[in-house]
Amino acid sequence: MLLEEASKTEEWGIVKSSILYNMGLEPTELLLVPDNQGELIVPFSDQITLKLIGHAKTAKLDANKCYFLKPRRRGMVITCRASARFLIVKINPIYAGEICRDLSEVSRGVHFMDLSKDSLQKLKKVKKAGKMEVESILRNECVINDSLTSLNTTVANSIERIKHSSGTIKVRDIYHSLNVSKSKLEQHFNREIGLTPKEFCKIEKINYFINSYRQDEDQNLTELTYKCGYYDQSHLIKDFRYFLDISPKKFFASENRI
Image 1: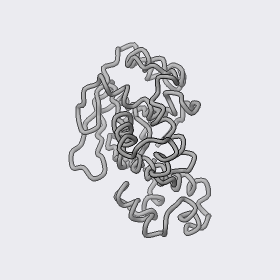
Image 2: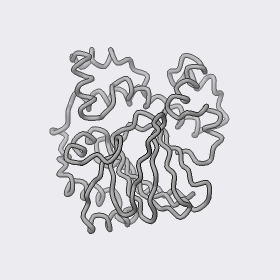
Image 3: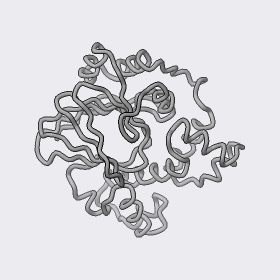
């Protein structure tokens, strides 16, 4: 499988990163970790199937069409042919609610985005066009206002605190520091992000563990477990099984996990 990272942006840009997947070889099943980012998914050559961990139903995404997913509570499995080629654009979560407001939901958490043919052609060349081209498409097609003054400051400030702590901050510390009630914070998060603050923290924490381990696979796992805010290894294993339905050992041993 060939991964081509196309672009990265600043903290509050609309597009966080773009990755073009050329599956190439069997097996044609890809496990994606739970994600706090929104996702724009465009299959180019073949239909692909999405299945969220913990749900029996699948969503079939047709080729040359565009779909949007709000931040996911759990991991996701993509199944496709070996010839499949598809683009996943990571979207800053602060814009997820705004993008979804005018979209129709075709399956659980999957929204159809009716892009023009011209925009789809531009997305096919995203590796060459880069971040600004994708952001321009989203602003034109979804009428996104990317001005910081238009963002929900409660959610934006909460996300900043969660990311700064790598997900280890307590939710009560967030709403105390922002001087808002717990119910008000959860209301803002559910509307704009589609997750609770606690879920956002847990997803941030497990991603911090995964990325830290990938940077140095020879480091002491017990020390890393505590460093990433887990009480012990059983706590870490429990989170892996919930989010990815797999143990940490099997996850890192697998070739097809992102």
